[in-house]
Length: 180
Image (cartoon, rainbow, N blue to C red; front, top):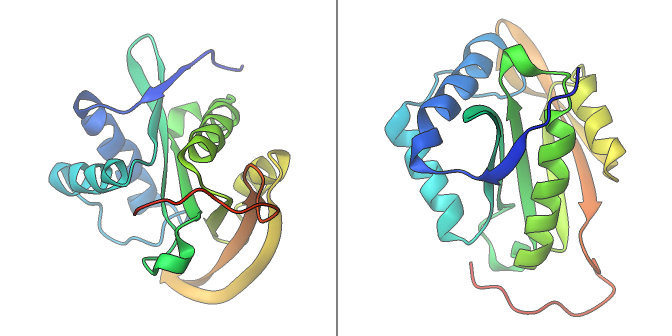
């Protein structure tokens, strides 16, 4: 059953839920290659860094409960990459396959377009993460490649699937300057 969630910018009050959601995937999944779950202070620092760039950090909530979140970061630190962002989406394990990704991803795309990004990259943990691949395909991402066996977690080698989507006018016009 699809959830009618509210998508909004994350606040300090959301950090505990974000920490809990992410920790689940660090401990139990291969969608992130992180091995040890970061604590509250580290997640707060990461969120502040995203927001310092003016990029979106969104949550999906139902009746005041955060069920998922998404954010975008600069793709790489070198200035030439300043019009490209990398996105991440995490849904609470009890709420997957209920449409939250289909609400968060377009909201994230729209916010990044307003920010001035022209390309969005998804780095998907594990070639077997078909739900994430299909979600991204649904919103116009194209396969850009697979990095074979670049991660090692839970005693096995893992791939990263790279997908990419043009934002706004993409490379057809000159961008307005972004200071990151």
